[in-house]
Image (cartoon, rainbow, N blue to C red; front, side, top):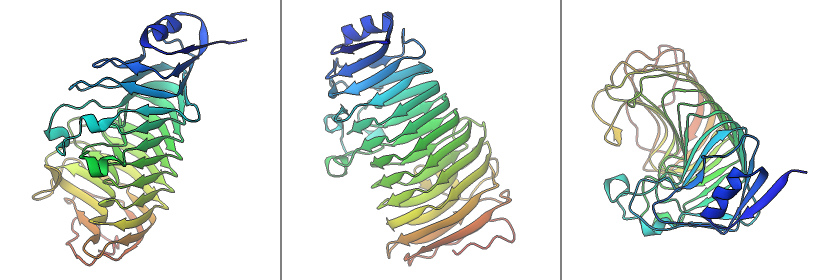
Length: 339
């Protein structure tokens, strides 16, 4: 029978990782200020980590992360009733990244692993930073930053994904004040399926930001984007280098989007579209299929500003309600976009 142990503080956790425990349950741990909950060092392949009770963190002005998870063949599970409580209100200052330093919540670098059922509440900054992952499934994750809408939270991305392969994020929910999904360079075969995004800045694929390595084979399917300022967008940095190839948005529902339903842009700079779009990070083999819903009256249904290097697009959308018409330019010839 596999050995199992419950730990209630950092010292017990370090001892448990050095033992032969196949199941380690973290319950009601108070992590000291300026330290990460270390699920990396000495963690053996095949271990199951369970979160139980309330996990809390001391206050310090630092970059974090509050929790660091790294390893191979791990099973990370949230037990019913648990909460990873970032108590982000202690850091929020209405300024986000432009204000005081704030710790990101959970850093994940895993291979051949599963993360299921975690409840993250009130992250000070980013929720899940998924970096260097390979063959990892995230299911039934709840990133709950709704308190931040009235308490000064900004830049609280739900899932930030970079340098990863074959990652699936499924049946999860994000309520936040920035991108629900921010997918960045050097990613291949990322699946974002049957998720609900509320209150933030929508689902974003971001190319040409620092790392020129390509973004390829991205599938965003069966999602709902509710009361965000943007629904879905593919954006490349003005002057950036790289490639975005094979992004598919399929069966995505937009509800009460305030600014823009679908945005494709090649001139992202200083937080939004800025200046003329540039070549250098082409958006190719883009599929928009059955993306539908509504934008509020003062918004724009579809906006496209890309340079002339886009190609091989397929487009089928029905987004209505926005009365602000914006120019669409740079689409491949023959593509009919309801701008």
